[in-house]
Length: 350
Image (cartoon, rainbow, N blue to C red):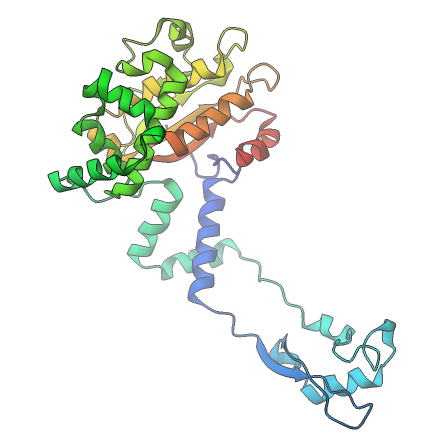
């Protein structure tokens, strides 16, 4: 269904419409510097001994509608030696407070919809595309072909890492070498845009946490058909689901419904193990490796007391941002629950 950009919110609680306007204002600020300010040096002199003492130089910024000369500021300073206990002989290096300076304060002009339309009309086609890609998470990387020499560099960088940091990986190479072969390495290289060092670091970290989450089952293929028995009930609950179709940008869509969570039955670790299986099922598609994922979180029937788990959300962010080789393009909250304003700072902290 067609959804208005004013209805879809990101993890910060801002609508896509507001985020786009924010990006437009930032673009305008970088293209047009404020011409209404001017600066000049102001020096403070100590006249007690009729000699020029050490003076400090500072910069005063005022609007051109009220340019005050350095002499007028300096004379104002010495004419009020004891003003509010500041300035004068006791504080030769302190500029006095001048209430007239308050008149020079300026604020950013209010941006109205018609101004935004005019500004959008001034954007080039490339700038429009860049803003939309940044806003909707649709930026695409160039099709990367992993050559044999890149795989060779990957193996060399992997050998340079101390064995104590890759115990889980070494065990996987012994027990299930098919899970750490060239195909799997290509997934990490594509994720890192052929940055070998970055890919190797994520590869090692991935296996450390894969073993922590799954135990001995980590050395079996992570497929929905072979989900470990103790997580089958969690998987059947439908907390995580891979939608059958991708979006128009070729991104995999993962549906999350926390209202199906029962803390008495489904542990946070069990939920994340199911998510890993869902993600690995989606990563079989090379286009998903390139285009990434979009998470759709449905929260209309959620209760903060029954369904919110900080541990589960922490594992979610860690998995997506630090462990798994996935490109998380966007996360949309659909049907925000009444307590969404309480969750926003917690999610930002995580």
